[in-house]
Length: 278
Image (cartoon, rainbow, N blue to C red):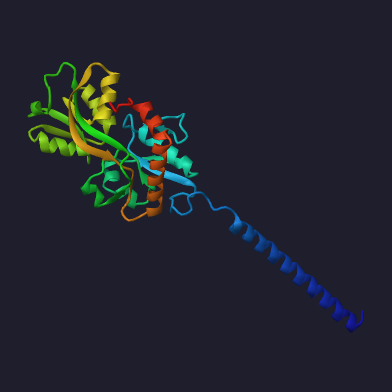
C-alpha cells in the first residue's frame, strides 16, 4: 500500500470513528431529551420524602381515626387515613403511613427530622403547637370526654380528686385534665393502645381523651360508659414542619375544599360517624 493510500485509509477510519462518536452522542442526547421531556413525577413540586409518594406519620391505633387495615392500600384506614388517601389519589400520589410516637409528632420533632411529609393523627390545632408546626385548615371538630367502667361511682370530672386517670402524652386531653382536675392522679400513656387495656385491667379508673375514641370503646363494650363530655372548640388539622412544604400544604387545603364540595368528605365522615356528628 502506498503512503497516499495509507493516509486516505487513516482519514476514512478517523471519519468513521467521528461519525460513530457523534452518533453515540446523539443517542445520549436523545435519551436525555426524552427523559427531560417526559412528564415529571406526580408531586414534583412538593419536596416529598419519596418521589410520587405522600408519606404520612401517625400514631396507631387511635380508633376511629387511625387503625391497621391489611385491606387498605396503605395498610391503614380510619377517618384521617381515608381522608388523606382521597387527597393523595386526587394529587396522583401513593400514600404511605409510618407509625410514630404522637408526642414526637405533635411537638414537630418527627416532621423536622424529615421522616414524613405530613402528620395525620387527630392533631388538635393549638397556638402552642403552631410555634413548631404549620397546620392545614381544620378538617374535624372534636371535644373531650371521660370514660369509666359502667359500675364506677365517678359521674364526672368533679369526682376525679384522688382517682387515677389515664391521659395521652402531649395531648389536649392531658392539658384539659391538668387544668380542670388538678387533684386527680394523672397517668401518662403513649396512646389509646395502652390506655384502653389499662382501664380494662383496672390499672386506672378513667380515661380522659377525645370523645370519638372513647365513644368507640363505649359502643364496643357495654361494661364502659362516657359520663361527661367537654366542649373545647377543638379542630384537627394535618401537620407540617414549620416553614416547610408550603406548596404541599396549600395543595392539601385545596383538596380538603374539593372533597367537601364534591361530597367525598361527607361519605368518608358518615362511614365513621353519624351524619349529625354524634
